[in-house]
Length: 259
Length: 305
Image (cartoon, rainbow over all chains, first blue to last red; front, side):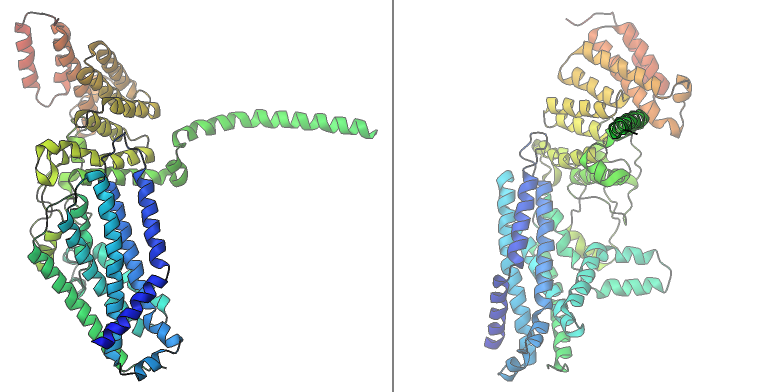
């Protein structure tokens, strides 16, 4: 475990040395502050449009950070020729993969803490309320969902040649799931066979990342807390996919030439 | 030729050419200006006619906010949401909705769908009725739809219902009557003499300012404007009970009903009866109207102090 955490620590340090997070965080703050300054019929209590915008920016920023940070991990080690010396140490290939995964995942967790703290402050400035448990549920499932995206991107970084192509493909897949993943079954029902079976198979095979994504509506519109059992089940469901992608990454990396 | 003379002749020729060009371009420029007057805002210039599509999306988004996010997507059955409920509830927009609004999602299709419904708004509520909390004292939460309505009006200044809906919620639930009046006057600047906007403006004078004279004048102007909308078409044809005439009949009935109520309040029973008779022409329940007219005929005329 020490080896895994050592690799993870390096990844976290790399994130706070890079400027991606700072740029996206400041951009989110600037856009939200500008939008908050708009006068809407002299009413200073209107907040939901701001909450929606802020959450959308948080989701976009977190996905950008998660995918771009993960996509360059192993290709960068290979390009800088540090992969071979790293594996020459008492560090197995699966440990490297898990270390990279944990590093990116924890780094995204830190990013989410900053973003959701700003979101909470923004909402409280007008609502004068702190539904902390609701925010915790949203942030937690968001983080678990990013675990799936990171594991997928890590697998992609071993399959695709360049980080750019990997990032693009991962973005397309994730965006497609977020936008239409929930409705694939409805689309399947309206199609004839064998297209129906193909779409249905896809529907059951993909990780339903849109479940935490659509939770935004509950936060924006002040809906009551979701049952903790459902949150736990969704987290387990997503972690199972993350584990599956990680195992696949380990299997691919086991046969991969490192030089 | 003397160079100085050539110079002066050229100068005169250029002046004549400039004058001719200006005389030629001025009428074209004027017609261009009048067509651009309607689109002198940032969004219209940037997006052109496509700004109307975005305006409609903003209007629908406002209705989604009115339902606290419980709203059909393109994959759901939206028969009960054809006319946005936030517009329908104003009473100033005709409803085209059918079906059950509380269960557009239907039964869960599979276990993923059933599980996912715990993470999305899953109950039909209206913001003016408390939204998800069902707390009727928080009906002012309806303010949350305003940013989208404002954006919709910016994107499509010719969409009447945006102004009507905005003004209604501003004056009824948020008690912002001056802002509501300002919205309607902005609408009238962009759509001069529109009967529906005039009708709403009249409601402000009648219901909020209690100024019967100005309300009557505005509603009569609305009626004249309604008549001018289709010149040459007789009133009886416009009030025929066909689907094409639905909106025509609706606005006529609204204005005449309001005028009748106003005259009743002012104690002018004969004028009120006259307006109720016109309401009967457009009303889907003429028997009820006739019963009311009969009741009024029994009453002695007594103006309010």
